[in-house]
Length: 248
Ligand code: NAP
Image (cartoon, rainbow, N blue to C red; front, side, top):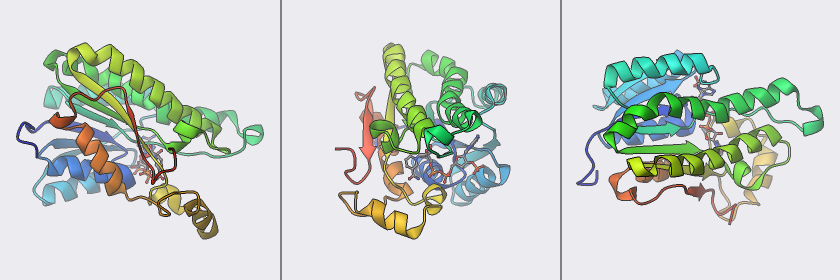
């Protein structure tokens, strides 16, 4: 932990598995209290328990982030318990892939509501005390699909590109309150999300990645941890690609 870093309260969505779990663990290792959010109580509960068992501080909160009323109620409960959340990582996301001509309205809406509107609702619910403290970090997890676009992922690419616009707008809106807002755009990372890709598709994708391999959740968490630190206090409105060189 940087000498200047003091323990904070962090909230990570999608902390039950994959990238979000690695982010929650790395922020807990910095001494922060981590509110682990996921849809399934067992997944965020397991991660929070493991952090506590390892000597860290964490609580679990099961919330469907696609449900704006549920997010708003959860924010009120979390603020009643902790007073403020200092670090917000909007990581939870889903895919419902398909070519546009065959994409259902519900697959479009579900992905936008979860991946993009979800982030907006957490910011709206948590930012007020952050502005009063005049210190905050918000990190939105976008994707190489949002940076470059990806055929078969119009809904996901639009949501992830939307997160980049949201990041830049929020960075300008909250800069005077000393709140930084940045995005991280992972490439292909080894998690449940990419485990569904057939082996031959994974091999083909690796030929398109300059570093020739998928990344690990910990490699995304390392960048997020830095952006949430005191040392990153002069960085805002940026998108960091952590993608093995895909989006140069
Ligand atoms: P993952 O392994 O599928 O885990 C997703 C997490 O998000 C889970 O904890 C899940 O909760 C949670 N979640 C999904 N929908 C939710 C909802 N409606 N309400 C609350 N929680 C919800 O995904 P991942 O690969 O770690 O991806 C994390 C983020 O990185 C996503 O935004 C993804 O788009 C982005 N990303 C991933 C990759 C990649 O290659 N893996 C690449 C670029 C960007 P439960 O555990 O309860 O199901």
